[in-house]
Image (tube, rainbow, N blue to C red; front, side, top):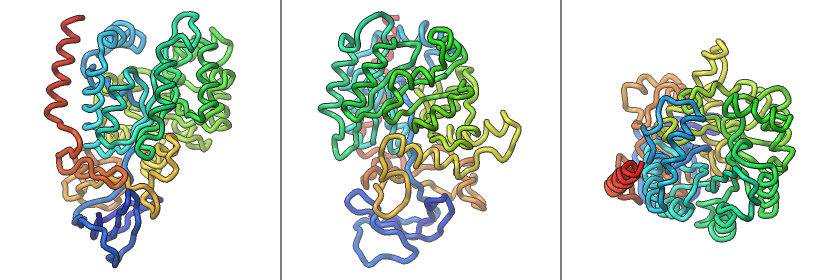
Length: 428
């Protein structure tokens, strides 16, 4: 495909007008302000359009679209124990398949090209991902509340399947991560065993970390150290790790994350909705710690529109710290694109750059909220809506365009999701 006469945001998120971008064999093969001599096939009219790197949603629980609107107005502990866990006990592989497909449609429609997920029912989830064409770093959620060894858990067999059979599928479309749900939902010996397995297979880790004050302080009482220190002590940070939330970091926690190369998955909408607090993103950025953006699941957001979280990421810390200079549009866009790609180990993704994967999205700028386009990056961060995305491309394949999905039967997915949720609610 050749994007013709299209505006784009370059590697520093500066606007370049009237560009030509050629895509071939899943990669960006040409960028310039003159039309190339090569034939790139289909031509895309770029007038009144803005080309961006696709977005990376680095913390989600995709099948929780099934719980959208179900567990509301509760603190995290009650939200989990009274509503979420009982609902999840009634899930099936088929329900998770359709819940994941529904999540993917929502993400694609908002420009997301890849997501990092932890959940259950790996067969259903992986099938939904691979059929859709979206990229995913998938991990099997692990919770252990007794003295079981890791090898005795259902997660152990699922992880072996992910690592041995699914990792790297379709040229890296699906990558297998390992997961520790959190310190408070596991045991030291299980954490160490999963960390050892991650090192053995060269896998990445995905965890929750210091999401709530109760979790953070409870870890200090149980183990005499913060959750960050605990994870480092038990080997989790010996491999590249994405740590979700990190709201209650303190003191030396920042040094630990920096020294260990941990990426923080900041989830501003979920953190506010569950009243968890505000991650100290300005300090994370000042320290040079990797910060990317996640929506969390649809049960705690309640949508997967990452543009909403980009907006909040760029706004709430200004208000919380009363400093309008904090978190620039370029920092917010970097967090939503390149930083997310790096957190997934996708080093050739997340930029509009020759040779990089053609993971792109297009925004319609012929709208009131983009007029005038004095600063395109500011418009994307502060004014864009999910519905402004008119095309999403992954590895050179257009998966979503002008309200239509090229790989998913959206009407069937909505109907099946409704059916499964109705059946589950009948049991509760």
